[in-house]
Length: 111
Image (cartoon, rainbow, N blue to C red; front, side, top):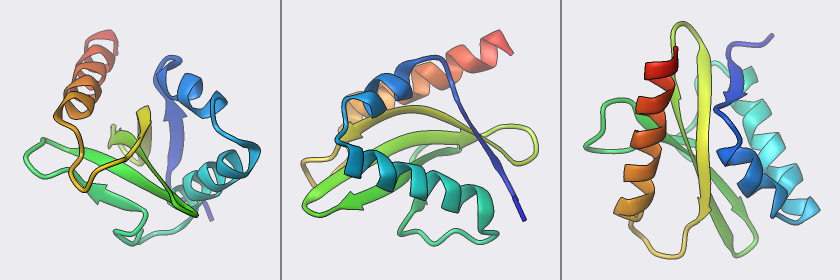
């Protein structure tokens, strides 16, 4: 049973996705399907970004690579994927959070 639907806002995430290796792409796809198909998603895969109003990060770990994909929940069970990046430090870079919040604002305006 599918609990959520994942969509991509514009081309931002797809541009990031297309630069990944095939193995990493498979792991990203697997994680996105998990988010669609599991009712209670473990924080290992989806976590709220503290200090934001409803911004989440999808967490993808592949070997030594750590990727984060920003998203938020729209009406109902719609997950809107915004952008992705390689995480190189323990803290999520503020400029990546600002970019995701800007994209969310754009999405809301266009809706």
